[in-house]
Length: 361
Image (tube, rainbow, N blue to C red):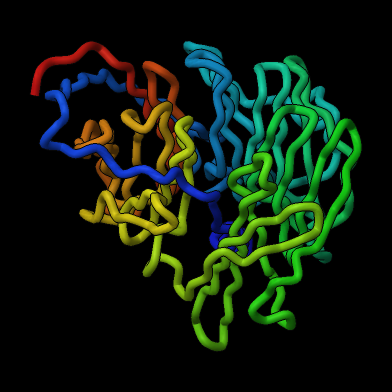
């Protein structure tokens, strides 16, 4: 159920810039970037192949030497791993570890502002009863629980600043944090109001409001229904919709560049939203995750394990993770480094790439 809910929490976008992609014929020759790679294993039970293994859910970094990875350990609960530049350590979250957390939980997403101001969102696990919303906050020294309105699950978060941000939930819920106060609204635009797990995932927040996607799975029809909406103070405008969203754009992951361009990735590759239309810019294979620093420096992780770098014109494979199964993972990058966190049964791994230099193509 946990993986199904994460799959259903796929998500959204905002209006793109009204500009065209660069013309390759008029562009300067690009440089080939070289990387050195290292690998770390995230497992609290390194000798076990079946118990307590860590499954990655999200990654966020304050810097190249201060990285956080959230996930859950099979048969136990979620946990957070912290990278200190040369080593990974399992955070002390629970009271028996010296932390402040009592009840088990599952985390799906980070929202970070600084190394001493990080949120993690997910659900509280109560055995024999439905999950409930859960959030923790990190002050640079310790994680503590945040009091939030009740709900079932919390997914991705978007912000204007650390005093004003939104978090998506299930059953149409959208949570808003503003100047220390939490409120929750319910978005009514559902294809099938009688069905559970109608998920809302915000991806961008600006002066126009919150751009978000809703996803809903109809088991009897075996179809996923997705809407692209604009939410503003309780008002909802449906901007686009599709069935089995990967037929129209990528639905597994979204990234908004500093220029305002919106990118999506999924089974059909990578798309960019320009002039109110999705344009496919990569279709060689399914791309499960994208992240970047600029429109000319985007990284992607494919389901086959290929790690790509996009320079605004071309996609280049910079590393390949060998696997006989489909890859599940997350990507975070800085100006010089890239971290790829994946779950490969029975453990999770973090691949760290460092730029070494460049040469002409």
